[in-house]
Image 1 (tube, rainbow, N blue to C red):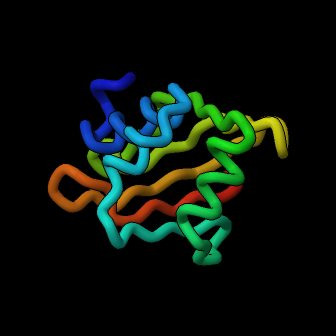
Image 2 (image 1 turned 90 degrees about the vertical axis):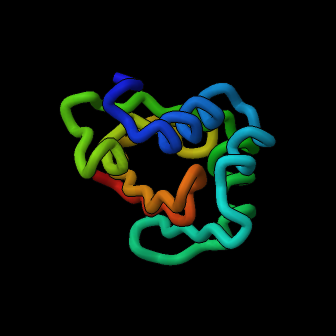
Length: 105
């Protein structure tokens, strides 16, 4: 499955699942942005609350991968909300993610 993802996106997903905050932010551009359910959020605040502050993890559905490995559906779980089916889309700039969008699938 990892070979189906864009390599930059795969790095971000791996960092998220490893709970590696430094690696996660290291693959983002300095001015990266994100949205959740169509609403732009403060990226650092959202990631700290929804990922690293609540043990966030995702399992990518390999049958859902599209857009050259920059979009997919995943089962996302954290200690705050439990498990949910979520859609993810990434904008990649060189070797960094410049934006990601997520929301209920």
